[in-house]
Image (cartoon, rainbow, N blue to C red; front, side, top):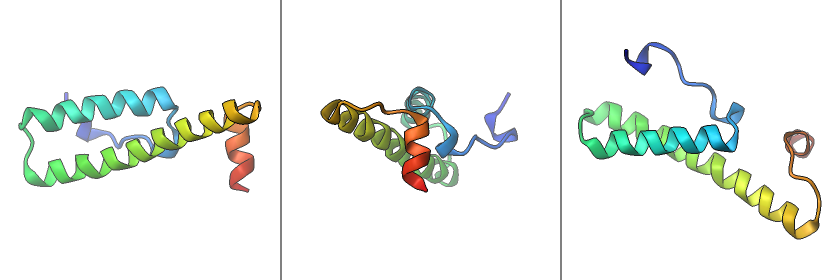
Length: 81
């Protein structure tokens, strides 16, 4: 069954672990060489979004460790307001 039949969840809704796991699977798909150019470009773009999302999570976690504060989804939402 193809994952193309259902739209992927928006990257912003994913936890770090979900985004990382999807990125790992996406890289494996790209490395397999079994996708066409158009699909590869779409996967690459999604991969860029996932990588940026993961990087943001890691940056917030590092900041939290340095400041001694919690790094939670609630903090993320508050920071966006």
